[in-house]
Length: 319
Image (cartoon, rainbow, N blue to C red; front, top):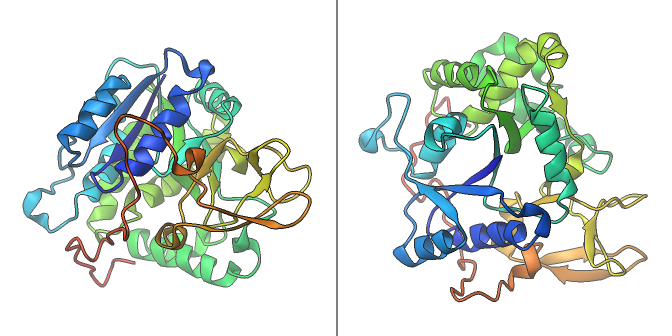
């Protein structure tokens, strides 16, 4: 198995924590790591090579090129369904966003076991604590419907607006999975309707849901939320006794992959995190709280750039 991510120079601080969260674990011995290089500095690349990370510069794909007016991160998004092409020779490919990190290795074993079923292992954004079930449920459904409508049409939006999002920030697939090529084909069709930031995730969701029963019987594995805990849905709790981030409600299971996916949280840098047993603690929710203690010291940028700042042209068909 190889675990692949992607990063620009700006996001290297997050990437560094993600890599260390894997390399620091004895269970990860021998695990291959790969990174799609989106403009890393030479010093950053040297640090990654010292961690035995394979670096690959992705190409523009799907008819796009440097003159398409798309920001650099979009290149990595479009490269995601082509991981076997960029990192050949592995049986299982696991992708993990650079703003995610591994707290409990047992969930990586779940991704591996799920991928070995032959199709895909992924965590839907479903949990009893997620805000999309409560305060933001109406806007969350409208958000899903808008994406489906713009990329696949009104009929698709009506069919799947109440389905959960299969979050492609973390997933695992075997090299032999038929979903790779079908995912690429869906993206190609979707891009003709608009250059939407969510095109790769929405395309995989649409392909899976359109063939749901067949894929379930072919080995599709849905993993629990703790395998990809998306912090924009609910902040975890901190258990001071165990020194671990856990699910907000009983039995406070340990979160395996902490996905710091909230742009709002990134801009604020830290927040109040509730503790098991009462009280709050100020945390930034990074691996080791961002204290990586390496020969290449990094900090989070004061302000992370937005896609609009990078020159992304929002069209009428782009959410």
